[in-house]
Amino acid sequence: MKHYSDIILAPVITEKSMAARSANVYTFKVVKSASKEDIKKAVEQAFNVQVESVNTLNTKTKKRRVGRYSGRTKAYKKAMVTLKAGSSIEI
Image 1 (cartoon, rainbow, N blue to C red):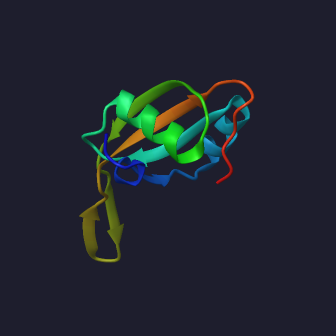
Image 2 (cartoon, rainbow, N blue to C red; image 1 turned 90 degrees about the vertical axis):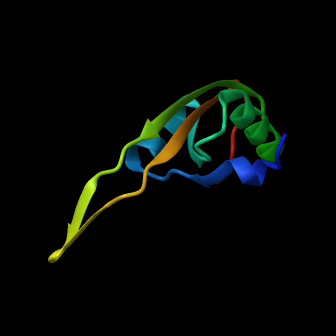
């Protein structure tokens, strides 16, 4: 397995992801080629916790515009990691 920093890119900090933390669900941006098993091992190694399940989704690009300039946001893979009871991550 690769090093966990090669798989987990960054935490996703939004209102929805922060609300999900009360249910022990943490959201991360991950590498597009990462499988659920790779993500599970990386989170367990990085934060020393027990992972119950991993759900993933590929986010699509969105059109954005700043003044007269238009473009698209980047696409990325997002992983929602559910931890076992009693485990938590400090981010």
